Amino acid sequence: MNTPLRFALAKGRLEKQCRALLTRAGYDCAALEAPGRRLVHTLPHPERVPLEAVLAKAPDVITYLSRGVCDIAVAGKDTIMEQGGPFYELLDLKLGVCRFALAAPEGSAFFEGAEHRRVATKFPAIARRALAALGIDAEIIRIEGSCELAPLLGLADAIVDIVESGDTLRENGLVILRELYPLSARLIVNVAAYKLRRAEIDLLIKDLKEVMADASDC
Ligand code: PRP
Image (cartoon, rainbow, N blue to C red; front, side):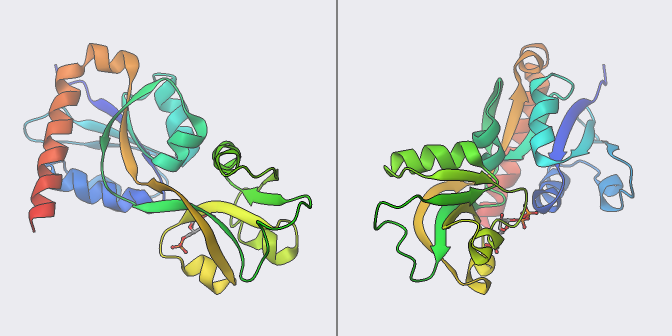
């Protein structure tokens, strides 16, 4: 039996770091280095079942995994928190470490007064939860990308967004009002796949934990 484990991988910032981790775990990731427009790639391993890497947009990774067409996936905790779903979250890969924050233009009086507040975000479910926890009543405005633009243009008073280096906030005159949740990439596993292929998935997790421990020793 050499049936590949189908592995959904979010395209973008996490992709390169995941590729490096899988390479260290012994997978041949050459196909991912110059993928062209091809979206599915086989990653062989000398001693393990191969991985069939599926490159997808972050929110779609959760859909493919939850619906059982992929066995395992790497997704950011941001996407996991926003979408939820029936899957197991089995490993914090400690990649793509960043955080969610509430931010607003420097000098803003976001917490003062009782006027109608508007918060722009790519993550409405998370924003709603975070604002409720802070006791703030606000209208949530959903934005698809670069929500830092919304306060600049007067569409919103604040944003709830991912902050990594802080450069995007700084370069657009925004400051963090509250740090909300820490974020990093997680390995998630389809519930049925974990029943059917548990030994192979546990072996992959063990391999990944070992290379992560080696890296933290350096
Ligand atoms: C994220 C986030 C911020 C930016 C923060 O967007 O939504 O805009 O990164 O990063 P920084 O703190 O390092 O500046 P991303 O680049 O993922 O692009 P997107 O807007 O297309 O989602």
